[in-house]
Length: 175
Image 1 (tube, rainbow, N blue to C red):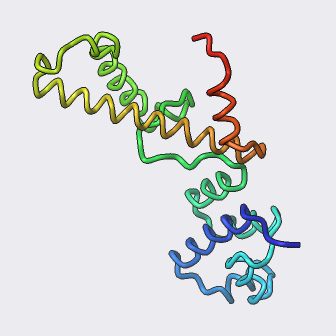
Image 2 (image 1 turned 90 degrees about the vertical axis):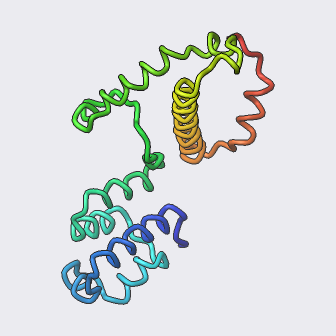
């Protein structure tokens, strides 16, 4: 049986973490009760791991960031982008996302797009131009996030994203 692309991705994440921690693979293999050669093959993406071995290796490495990356790779969730996330998760408050969200809402209130388009370019001063640029960067971040989610769902459920996009373009829109 061949190694799936997801397993190769998981193996790559584990390999990076093992290299980063400068771990001795022989000691690691002994601790995990694997042969050193089998562990090497698993970390290089040449042998399947299975969920049980993934959990054992993750437990040995003890890095929550690696655990998150592995879960994201295994369950097809998009990797978090280096941006302000806008989720309603309770932990968002702990990492200051509420404050960031309020700042973003203030900028959006100031520049409603339809009002903004009616203002001639000459009437916008340098400070307003900077704020508009910040707003545009937020829009780009939002679009990137939505595209990541779209691609993850298409990959997860084996949809051809190009076909979905074409169907969406031909579908009658009511908005």
